[in-house]
Image 1 (spheres, rainbow, N blue to C red):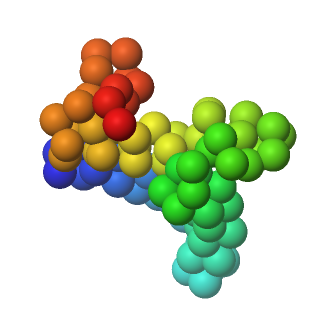
Image 2 (image 1 turned 180 degrees about the horizontal axis):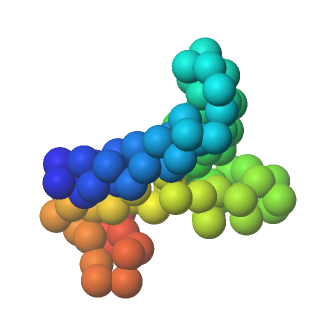
Image 3 (image 1 turned 45 degrees about the horizontal axis):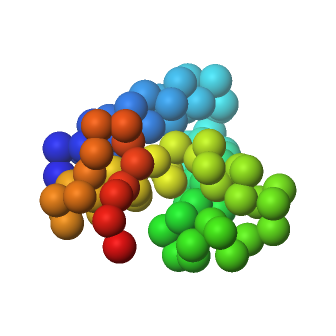
Length: 89
């Protein structure tokens, strides 16, 4: 849970910076969602990256949301390794 909170705190600072640059609250909200949706849907949350085309798989492998999901799954199932990769079935 602490890992997710830390990630959300870091992401909040990104949105705070965007909020300082844009003029209206609706523009900040729309810009934030436009950036967050591709990161969420192009991650390993919903589908195994090995089933994706090579270009999408390369993007999923460097997506920060994928790192968060992999680390959260590994910590929850007690299979997280020190290299950041999940071992086991």
